Length: 92
Image (cartoon, rainbow, N blue to C red):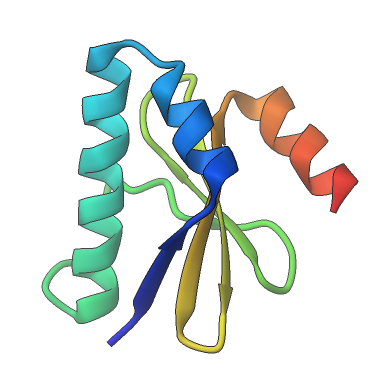
């Protein structure tokens, strides 16, 4: 079973979205957790490994969710577009 953490940066980026985009993010996170628990396949998630521990999933056409996966913990970092995700990765 995977444990989940949400950083303040994730909460702040989520709060800045429209209610429709927020619903898409919640849905994508739920589908990812179902995938990790073995309840479903990753189809439609747009799950992509970016580096050794950094991953992203697609919440919508232009919104991505960046998370760190290490030691059985998924730490959700930020919701943003492609450029915002890249900027976050460069900052470390």
